[in-house]
Image 1 (cartoon, rainbow, N blue to C red):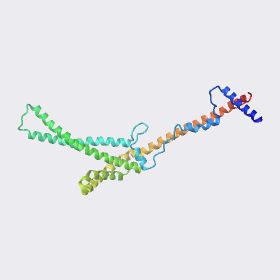
Image 2 (image 1 turned 30 degrees about the horizontal axis):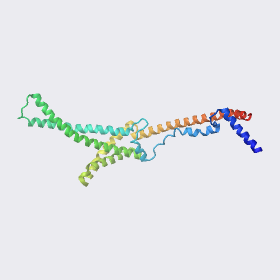
Image 3 (image 1 turned 180 degrees about the vertical axis):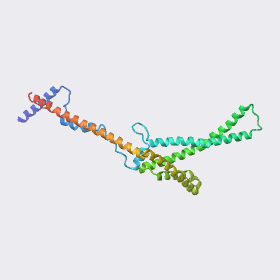
Image 4 (image 1 turned 90 degrees about the vertical axis):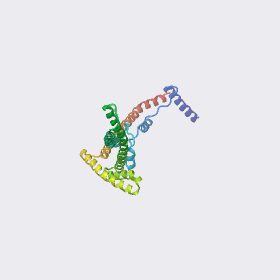
Length: 269
């Protein structure tokens, strides 16, 4: 009989609580349950990704877009240098060919008949322009390819080793020279290595001198900016996490008194 009365009283309390809260509502979580839900809210924004530690992580970061949907400065410099090398190669191969073809046309056209002087000049310019395009393109893509491979290898070595040195440029020059001369056999391969090394050392020395005037290398600048950005994101994340914890604790304390009053009202039914 005592168990039936306790069960009846428990059911009556549940029915009274449901009527007091309104039909179709679920029990409201307690303050402790609200506080336990804070970690799940904090998980809505993750901890900032740690800085790359290995050489492969730094290397893969060169070809990854950042938060502003932009490539790193080193990658953009590779593209800019490729374009500049293409233009320089085109001028280097095209201008002498233009002058030579125009001169050869004038020398070989003394017996030809032209309508007027302007027609003769235009014909000479067209001959020179054809040579400018033909030989300029031959030099342009070769110089652009050489510069691109050289910069990709040297930049990759600097990122992998997390250090910029002349040895990176010497190795990049040797690799690029060997790649361009490997079709000539072993002797051509050795000659390409020597040529690339001779080219890479002065180029690396010039770049190192420019970095010395700037105060830091591109790799050092990249590491400093990456570290500062990570520290800023980490501070913002910790600040937001502290605010969420304080908010959860405040709600937990505020729920304590209403829950006590609600329990007293339910017991009075």
